[in-house]
Image (cartoon, rainbow, N blue to C red; front, side):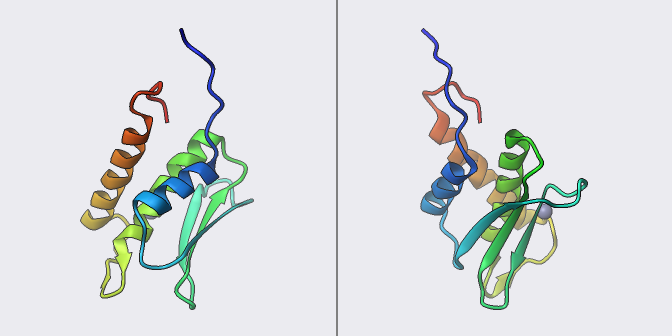
Length: 113
Ligand SMILES: [Zn+2]
């Protein structure tokens, strides 16, 4: 028997990532209108807080991918190890950890993200 599941919100995934893959600095997420060619941004502010901006005009499935992408930057940028290359090996490892966390969360469910 199958059932239609309500898509999980960005807030759900943010809570999941913060709980399973905490980072050194506080992280906040905002959905707001960005330029059409930008899905999201990750900023480290002067008070050592990460602000993830997600384009509110994108579909939820794209917003989720953007959240995972930007959160990998958060995990890769740590004090003393600020790997500022945009998508370096450490970013790739962080992205893989996120993928695994989300995959494990969905095991036993319908497998969709
Ligand atoms: Zn990036």
